[in-house]
Image 1 (cartoon, one colour):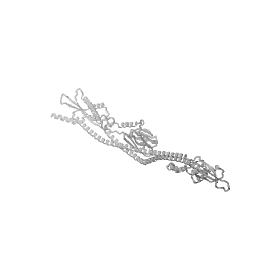
Image 2 (spheres, one colour):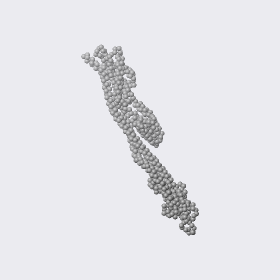
Image 3 (cartoon, helix red, strand yellow):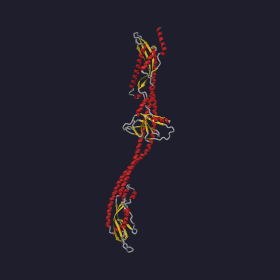
Image 4 (cartoon, helix red, strand yellow):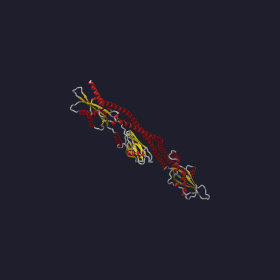
Length: 624
């Protein structure tokens, strides 16, 4: 009966005492461990001593709450991680698509520049070869002007009185010179060697064919066979000999200056091979002499014809080779021109596609950043409950509370050692996994948020020699401090790293220019130069830039570089027409593959933002 009575009293003490078996949770955020120990000691002294059963019931509740917390945290973490992995994958695909579109656009622009260069080179080649051809033709004309042709001419003046002989001779020489030019000596060989070969046009030859004449003439008079009506004697006079003609030479041609006319006389001029000339030569007994002149003329003409043939052949070969170069250049030019318009249309389409891909990347990055922020905030909110009870044999020379406090302090140290050891273990286990690369959320040490003293207990030993056991039960609501838990700090460090990247040596990757020159170029908010200038960026990485010049609209673009190649970026700036109205400003920035954008309909705010930064910056940081 006594036994049952004691059990009833114990049950009632448990039921009645559960309301005050422990203290409330005490907020100890930002408190040091010595401060926390001091707070716990104070609370220990204010508590009564209980049997261990109600305390253990409270401890069990907290362990169940901890299990629920862990399950709920990990369930949300897995869901967020899945969502984050999908967002990260979409962002990476968008980055790849954007860079690919930009590369294709740049490659097409390079092809266009190459085609435009072909057109320019072809025009230069055509002009240069045509100039050389014209020079060659001038040389041919000059050589032709030096070539002589000879003809034997005979002129006769009938029934002269024997007076003013020099005047008569001058008139006869003029007529002979005129006959020599009209005979067009050498024109046949010139036509076959020069005109037919396309060296000079027939019209050009006719224009030049005015000629120069030199003559070496002799004269003889015979009594005229025709009697004068008055019975006075008249004489027939001949002049004959070699006449040298320079078909294309017109300088200093005195023979072609018309002399004083001799109106009462008729002068007849014949080529020595004509029937009339032969009859006159026979009458004046000059057949043999004239025949000798003809042989000399034939020899000289053969030599000149040979020179013309050689000159024509050489000029023809030279001009044809140059004309082949002109045809080739013209063909290359025509081929290039047929593709230039297509390339320009392609570039317009590719630029549009690049902008669309950039917008996709902006949206994908925005989604990623939002998911990443949710994931990071969840990781930083991780908290658990740790509860533990410690029993020690009663030390007779210590007050109860002092022994409870000493046990509590040991329990605190044990808790910290266990949790921090677990952090090290977790970090070691994931070192070679994907999570290890996200250093932004690596746990540093445990951080106690709140503490609770569940109760002081005493346990009577069944062995009287052992005495009583004193127990203390503590609970800790804890989270973690992280090695890098300030995303803004990380972003600032990354931005500074990019901003401080300066060109070194001649390893430039981009060349920026504008029209007009003198525009300021901002990369990630930092002024990096005034156009035109070269700059070095990380190859195979995209960056957002803003080009600004007073009086002109801001120009935004995304630039990237290739290793070993200087990429050219030129911007035609548009003058601002009006300051009124609402402008939308789209600013892109890509840092390490991440893209951010700002779209503003408030021009004043947008101007203020762009003047301060030149762009927007976003850090991509995935915690574990």
